[in-house]
Length: 171
Image (cartoon, rainbow, N blue to C red; front, side, top):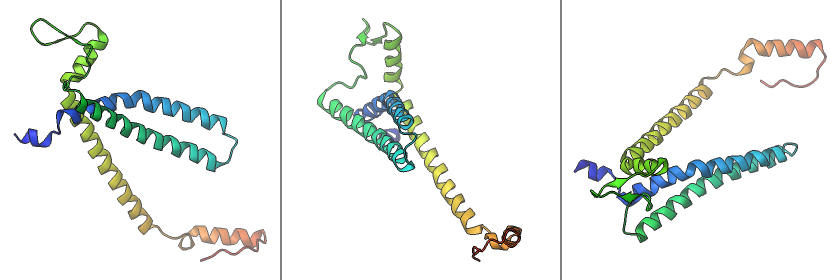
């Protein structure tokens, strides 16, 4: 009862699991293309390399969203909720695996809820880590001691006097 409220519709879980599996090869292909382009334009300015990396990140995001929407629409248009249509049914009415890939797809079909909860817990833990890292960075920036309050300022001042550097060291 409570688990039914926490669990999204089976079509959404099915689309999410398919998206997670397809994102492995899709993101690997995008990363391969990005590494090729970064090597190709290694002598270019940092703006171009940053644009390539940012474009790859956006392409990975939109590829994942597009894959999820594709499988969500596919699940809505097809009545069945099985992960793969080529797995054959055994005589007693359960799914039968004929080989390694069928066994893998059968395992994924049976453990979709586990994969979904594992993914959600990873997203939550990453979000918590990201929030604490941002809070820690804010803490460090608010407790930092300016350079002129340390011995470093005195050392820089001695170097400027010794080498007759006429630049200004701002306080």
